[in-house]
Amino acid sequence: MEYREHVVPRGHYRIYAREFAGEEPAIVLMHGFPDNVHLYDRLVPHLSGRRVVVFDFLGWGASDKPEGYPYTADNQTRDLDAVIGHLGLKSVVLVAHDASGPPAIDWALAHPDRVAALVLLNTYYGRTPAARPPEAILLFSTPVLRNVARLVSGRFDLFRRMYWWQVGTRFIRDEEVRKEFVPLLYEQFDSTPSTKPAFFSLNADLRGTMRSRSGAEPEMRAFGRPVRIIFGEADPYLNAGVARHFHRLFPDSELFLLPTARHFPQLDEPEEVAHLILLTPLAGRTDSATGTSTASEGRGT
Image 1 (cartoon, one colour):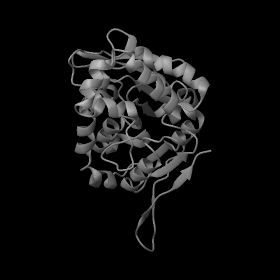
Image 2 (spheres, rainbow, N blue to C red; image 1 turned 120 degrees about the vertical axis):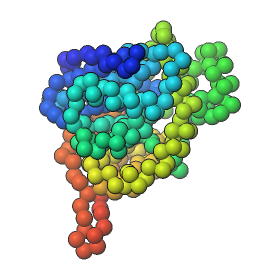
Image 3 (cartoon, helix red, strand yellow; image 1 turned 90 degrees about the vertical axis):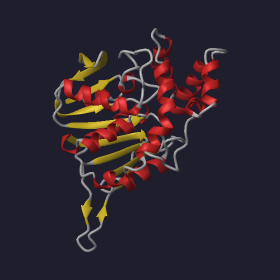
């Protein structure tokens, strides 16, 4: 598919973005860590006809990787705001995956009038008891342990080995997709400058991010825009329990679990994920007898 490339100014730095022409509202696809725009290569063709924007957060992919920069969820929210503002997006469907959950939800709660819909793919926000941190994230986010991990990450090829095991073996279901996408996603760590500082910094920020968002439940319950939760049910980390937790926090949301998809449903089941993104949003209805709000739960094919 043809796309237009953009260089989005963000202070002294530049964010790389791709824009696919089509009908509004624009669908903004966001990656987590350790990923970049290529995470959506299999999904975007199934969104043909819609205006679609994908971009690399600062520190990732083709965006600038400033040395010593504070890579945090708060700054990623500002990255998202810069992309939306620079491209003149009036109304957006925000699609968050993994670590882009906090910036996407933060922006949505702050600008509900500009959000056509919010879509959550195997992501997180505040503290969720059901969540299980991936082994690589646990290693690099736990205080003290992460310092040791950083020191030895360049030795014995530890970082590369951990990445290829975590992303390939645990995150992606199909062998052929693994062979194509693990090298494609990993090459940003071998490049100069490398994405490793952003990975380390976001891991260090992770616990504080989740703790600080735990007080947002009232805003999430009051959020009046359509929310669609699409999770790979075979993900042992950001799992079905996390999806159902989001379903409770957004009372008018719709929940869809894809039985065999893992952490990357956009790679495992791109056609089904696209279909669910493009479904006409169904707002929760109010039971006339009780006045209670109801919402739907479904299962992907």
